[in-house]
Amino acid sequence: MDLKHAEQLGDDFSARSLENMIALQTALNDLPRKYREIILLRLAEELPFNEIALCLEKNLEAVKSLFRRAISALKIKMESNYSARL
Image (cartoon, rainbow, N blue to C red; front, side, top):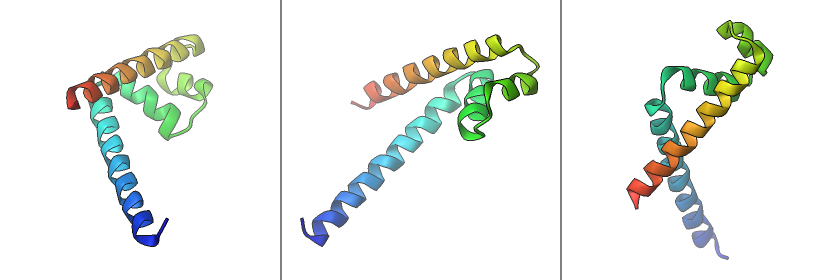
């Protein structure tokens, strides 16, 4: 593989990464606030579930359940957005 080919692959990867980031942001924005909040606390802020429970004033099991529902909703949004682009 020559340098020009490697650069082209890098550009393609960067474009796809940017498209994926935009798709993720769009899907997150389409979620209800409570889902966005828990996803961001867990994944962006890297808070453990027990700290999220304290922040949201909910019990630990409720927070875990909310997170599972939020991730499921995000997955559905991402899949529907992907299908719509095809």
